[in-house]
Length: 378
Image (cartoon, rainbow, N blue to C red; front, side):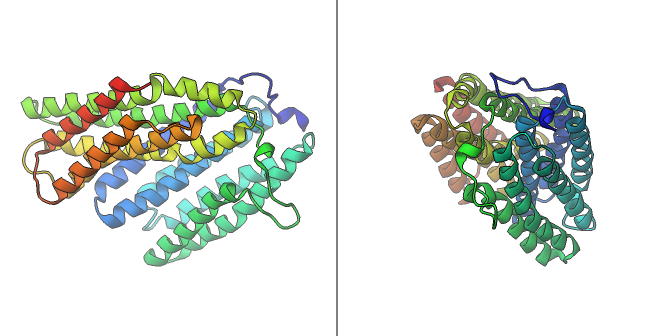
């Protein structure tokens, strides 16, 4: 089945079936933001983080899969349709993954991961080096799957521990380069990918997350009585989303895509800059969306701890992630982003020490800081 592989000659376009697949993850991101909004506690934040790690990994591994296997081939397309169904089921179970739907979530996630990886590992004979590399990936997905399934059967506290271990296995695998008995260890050179395709796919997921933030802003505002404070909060929340978009897409996204596309070992940057670090960007956007909803709903009065942490912490995490992304791709540390992260963190600390500001002031500060970074970004 050599015909299932993508020819890595020049930049390969993102196909319509990949865009169709992404629609499920619009729903997944919405589910995660609503889950966090409904559980604004330390435990709720940790649970949402674990689930975000799983959702991101399911999407990212499918992105790697589509970089190697051509989505317009019939068999590959059928695998993607199956992965889409499993992703939709997984997304539907997210709100109660730590309650009655734990096993359903774990099964759907592992069916997606193991099933897709099994097809990748054993479906083609044309590229022996790629086949062995993907067999290592498949082998590492099995112990992680066992931990996810065991967590689905476990009680609440044990479930969190087992799923934390499952995330460690999942995320350690590429960092360790999949050492597997009998198959050896992968090298970065084994991950011969189309860097431009990887960059474009990751950019689209950032756009998905930003789109969910816009939807939250509009839907929440539409449910509120129109008065000065709510309108101001709505405008500032929108401006904050624009600033986050501007920082990533104004120049940096295209330059980073060109950089990975020209790299002799694009797999190295794909692993660090895109597979790992883009998760921080997505997490920051989701947290910011929760903060936007809290501010639009209650723009005046004293800010709660949850409002403070989401309104300031979301942009801080996003900027930290983008700083690390720029460093991974261009080997430079943007001073303005570091300073902005520092300002937001200091303000969070002051707010938590009862230097009380109304939610509207918090989102105004966050918007100004993000806007200053956007205005000076290169």
